[in-house]
Length: 206
Length: 102
Image (cartoon, each protein chain N blue to C red):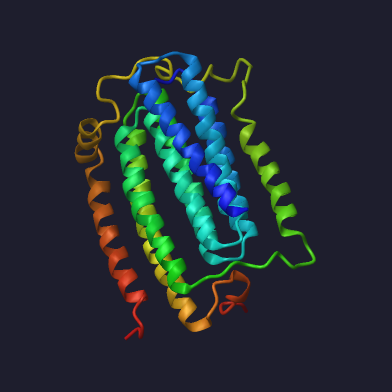
């Protein structure tokens, strides 16, 4: 059963990759191919996210999350964020999820039994999730009225981006000029995280 | 390549965020809770990238860069904590990790 789900997700991954290659390779533009690619990726991402939450074995959750990361990287690539897409695969799917899987296998976690409680946690959680989605999503549909601006502003999604948008040079330039302080503080944060992880995982904390 | 409206990306990100939030609330395994938090962070990354595309501002993608770095640091430390707790209590079930209760 889980194998079937994972196979379907892998198939979606391959289909979205193939669609991306076909669309970009043949220089197709316009609404229809982009909509198809977005639909495939969106369905895959939602299915993978549900797989993370609903899977009973932690390894299956982790693998579903890996699939979600890959599909999200593809979606970043369609949004002219090529460097971020590459970093998503290298950092998130290639380092963070590998760390998750190492820890799951180190702790030798097994498949969990079904929820056994007087309250149906999944039912209550789903209802809460739907309410939350309604509360958040009501901002995303057309708002009319004189006091509300026409939209988020800016050039918009349809306008062509400047050349090399989302490439290494614009991001690097911004990172090392305007965000230099944040960059340096982040490197200190990483050092602290490394030291903390090594100390916390030692066998006897002396 | 994308003449798709911004709302679609925001709705997809909010669905992802909701699924992650429900996962944090419903699941009892500490590592799966952690993975649901990562799902929420990825939803926020999608919002940042979509708005960077909408406003033609590269700052959104730089923010995603920082979010990824902080997420990596947080995952390393968090998993080290879970390993340390597992060594003492032999469980990662959030219901049984009640040492700090009054």
